[in-house]
Structures are given as C-alpha cells and as structure tokens.
Image (tube, rainbow, N blue to C red; front, side):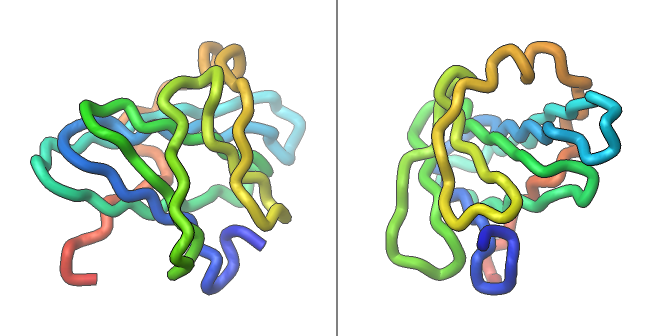
Length: 127
C-alpha cells in the first residue's frame, strides 16, 4: 500500500518547475480541499517525497516544468510519467497499491491554495 514503509511515493524531475499537490477527500466531511506548489530552480535533477495528511484520503500531483517528471514507488525500478495537467493528474489514494490517472481539474480549481506549504518535500542530494 502506498505511504507505508518501503512504498513511499518519490517524484524525480529535471530542471526548473513546480511540483503541484492536491489533497482532497477530507475525512471530516468539511469538503475543504488543499492545493499547493513547491518550486525548484535547479537546472538538474530534483527528487521529491510526496507525503500525506491524515485529514485526507486522496492526493493528486502534477509536474509543471520545462522537462519531464517521473515517479517511482519506494526503491522500485519502475518509473512512470507524472501528469502534466489537472485533467490527467497522477493520483494516489490511501489504501491503494498503485498510482492512477484522474481528472481532478474541477477539484483543484476550487481548492484552497497553499503554495509553499504543501506536503511535498525536496529530498536533499545526499539522501
């Protein structure tokens, strides 16, 4: 299952851009969804850890950058492209064992913006 030890969700990007994360499907029934972007100006590779909030069951992420982005689960060898727009976003649901592709554009459009304060983290090069 995703977000368990050894099943971490890692995104690898090339060049400058924004990794955007949408947290939705609130457990408390509030209907409040959060979207935010983390930026990098690095010309080379940046590795990101997609974390989660215990308040939400669903997460979607996209790479808005000049080059491509891929994700892998844990230390697995398989890498797949990260969605580039909210209409075809990469999605991770709690309890799932894989990443899907979904249209979450309407949810992202109405979510509360938390740029720079989302649960995606750049991983330092020495880790």
